[in-house]
Amino acid sequence: MVDTGATMIGLGAGEARRIGIDTSKGVPGFAMTANGQARVVRVKLDSVRVGEIAISNVDALVHEHDMPLVLLGMSFLNRMEMQRDGQSMTLRKRF
Image (cartoon, rainbow, N blue to C red; front, top):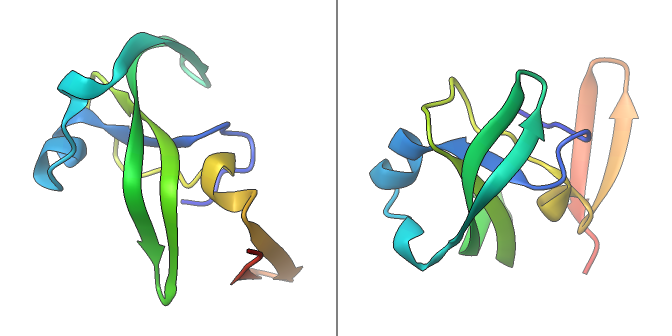
């Protein structure tokens, strides 16, 4: 889910395990979410791919609890050109 209000990509611990993210090398901390404060681990993702777009070295927060979906936050979106037309959004790699 595209979330321009999220500073970074956010995903739950279960999803992080499923895709092989090693949180032991991350930095533990807390983040404010729509549901209040949450324990997180800040990690650097080697690559994030959305369709044909791939971005390297992207910051993300792994939440201690599972989340129903992955939030595509500004650590990814800041590197995109976003264009919205009604219900559609188009992303293009900026650099």
